[in-house]
Length: 251
Image (cartoon, rainbow, N blue to C red):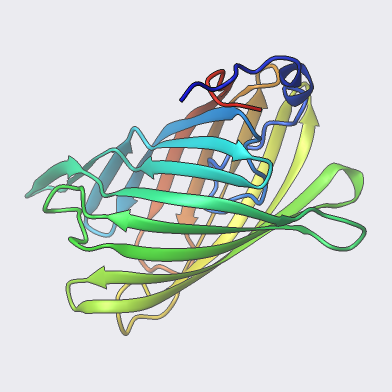
């Protein structure tokens, strides 16, 4: 079936602010926009309790199907974990998801979207859950005074672990502010409970800087640390986002 190419709608759409779903743990409520494809990519290097981990390329592809719906495909790419005595490497599990916009912000009300996803057992034996693990996220965002903006997530997942399937909850809060000259500053805290059955919630925080390049590209860098861990656990990551019109989708 033939579809019409994008024409007069595109110039107006390109004025929509670019709001990537990276580099934070917190996903935004903003959709990529009808007729656009967005590529979010990057890497994370982290210290773990007994070694180090590198994940790259952390790729997400966002497809704007209409004004309220986007399809998303993502994964952590190739994973590598090592310490003084061992080295494991292999691909991560992949994930397919959909983001549905419920309503925009108005007065005191934030914008809200629902993200439903399923992790698929496509990874290597060392890194795969070997099962299909669903997650539902409620994502919200609100513009504040003096150029500040806040956002957060409430997540519920069914996770497969070595001890069986567990219900995992997560919550996050993010705060951002424009710095001028297309730079932005962000910080967030988030908690995941449990990471392992029977363990307390794991609290983490990160922050960093973004820089917009035109209206449809952005680069970012971030640093983070586990807050309530007795181990020296930290992370460093960087990445980029590019958004392009999909000329093959009908408007």
